[in-house]
Image: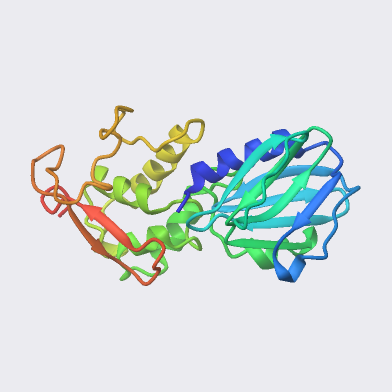
Length: 258
């Protein structure tokens, strides 16, 4: 699943292509909103909120999308023909660009005033203007017996972190994913590290936590089950954690993460 940094980059690209321009084309290919027509409206901005994307217009309308596991947005020149593709869920275009959404997990059109009912439950956004580490820590501590690996993925606590950054943050802090939140010695440091990892990667494609962009060297434990830990040589383990089928797998080193 794309994490907060990838969604942030997508929002920036959509903003560059759509903001300040009048929509001349709107094709919504989901049954609930198939008759919606936003042509004539000017896009004010496209922003990310955790893993959610919000495209706002001057008519007080918001297009809310979520990539889920397989979704993506592609920006093409307006003059380029969009091929027939059953994966397309949404097309928004102006005289210069067209944004095409593929396999979007969520597509809905709502009054901008109603956004809080859709994304208001989210915790502080690790890459947003509302980032508040103290509030994120407070929310995490509200359930001290919960395994920290599950708590970090709960978007109600902090918005944007996903499976990669969960695994890598916990490894770098030496914390076992199943340790209860209340037993994490330095929770502020854990939260701060997660934010810095996303911040460091938001401008580039790929997720690098080791400092090396060489193929196969990008992460410490994520995706490395059965391979030796880069620090101690112990085989990295993998197991399911939590009830969310989209993001429950976790990776850790049993020696480095006690």
